[in-house]
Image (cartoon, rainbow, N blue to C red; front, side, top):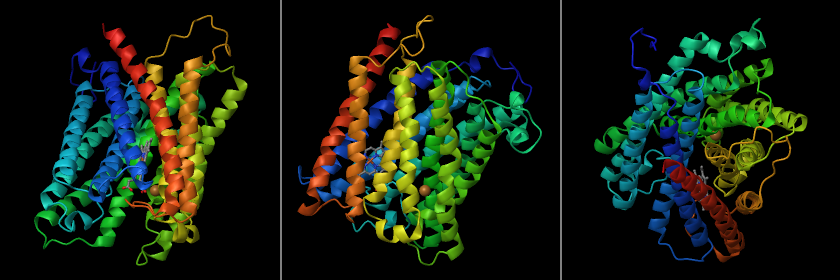
Length: 493
Ligand code: HEM
Ligand SMILES: [Cu+2]
């Protein structure tokens, strides 16, 4: 095998890395579970069901936010890597470096929070890490931020390897994004598969996001070490939310590759790159980058045009991808005799949850609504929909597919249905998840603030119902992860 530089490397250096990806998903599944339990603790504390010291609440909230977002990114990247590897050779060492840097980052972050006491939330909003009111020292903040830097470097390596391979194979960035088909005379037969288009687009924007994130991380670290070095707070906020918005979006856009690559096996027909599909992904690439000011609608000094852009791009950003992915999926599902199992059900749920979650998100992206809803639980309400019922559902679906029972070659299409236990677990996940996010939305509509460790008794009802629903989701997630682990262990014997 030749690399793009022409040097020869042993065949073994490339490998499909099924084992590494399976290990990543195992780690991801376990961390998702742990972080869900942290979430349960927070919700139960808000409902007055258990007593949690507020200082500890904010440590847990920080760990939950960083841990969940990081694990969404990790599982998304594993999916990206796994399926990109079907189309181009990828250097195995890059993946191990990515995983190693990720785990190093996790150790730093956990130590910063639970040993150092850092509790300034996953958003590390400048200058909060330096203004702890005596709860944590600058060392803890520096360690937390260094953890992010380590994870960011890992992601950069992974995306650069993916991009350079795709560019070499498909004719540059434009070729991999199917521009000849989107904007030229290219034919659909010659276009790269959907997974390649999605991998290229998400790698491009995640790289840009991480570079901006790295810059503001370094500035924040210098500020902590040399307090005289001040950063413009509004600029820092722009950079942080550009990075945060892009990173969490990228996790979903990477995970959806599993839908494009796996569901065709169940549908019995390939998922094709059409002109609309290609255009949609390029539009998304621009929109994901341009829409981030919807996080700054409360920042009066922001230029008006930027906020207007945030609102207007919010309206449209849901349309191209979700319309193309969700709509095509519905068309495929109607046309084909789908063979259902846990993997297929979770992947379809992922697309549905992602689509549904965009509605309250777009609402919150409107300036008049945001004036009232911002910093209420409406915000965790919308993002838990497309993360818990979107990204995480897709990641669990990928895991279920990795350990699936082989579909019998002669199985009649449409014959396979979810078995009794699978059906129960899936319904518990959907019902628990839907109930849990609904309680956030209801609280948000009633103006219950987000990020408050202590709630007044008037808010307890939703808090307690949400705790119950959360327990249901966790039960279902536990069975999904346990089954995955059991099958892996059995096969390893
Ligand atoms: C059973 C599942 C889950 C439970 C019980 C849960 C619970 C919570 C709670 C209680 C909060 C704080 C709400 C507030 O501000 O008042 C929260 C915040 C958050 N959650 Fe979850 N969550 C769950 C799943 C997830 C998932 C799957 C993700 C992402 C993949 C996620 C990401 C976040 C983030 C980013 C925050 C914001 C933290 C902050 O405000 O700094 N959560 N969650
Ligand atoms: Cu955003």
